[in-house]
Length: 203
Image (cartoon, rainbow, N blue to C red; front, side, top):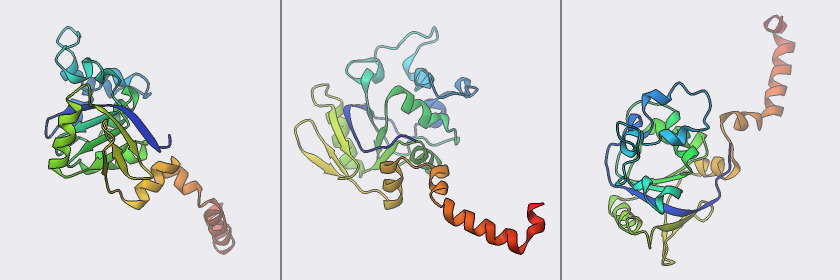
């Protein structure tokens, strides 16, 4: 898994609540067996018309947000079905951090396991950042996970909280398998002891 240490770039505003995972990545993309190319499907129905042409008014179809690295969204972001393609599509587009007042639990965990940082802030603070992001001249932001800060275009900083275990996983690029492998010696010792005591389990 890719490490998350710092990230800087345009922050795109998405002032909508209850954006579900089908809106993030529609069902027609779920047959993909690779993550590459899923960024094309991110927010497909918001970004494209019936002829698959870009809708010029949607934020990710405008400069500088075509290169957005951060998304600022409304409450209950990524509710709905537990499709892992949702964080995959964000990552493939280039967005590795989402800031919102709240997230669906399964999506929250899926993002941690895929190297994306989700930041929960009070709604009033999210609205302030949303207003800044809506201005192309002020939308540049930098996130520092180690320091737990968001630095704005004018140099001001916003602090955020994150669970220690999630921070450790993201900073070190550890998914579930990699965390398990860190216990390789202990697992090997347990298996050797069990094999000696219960050899029939290993036949």
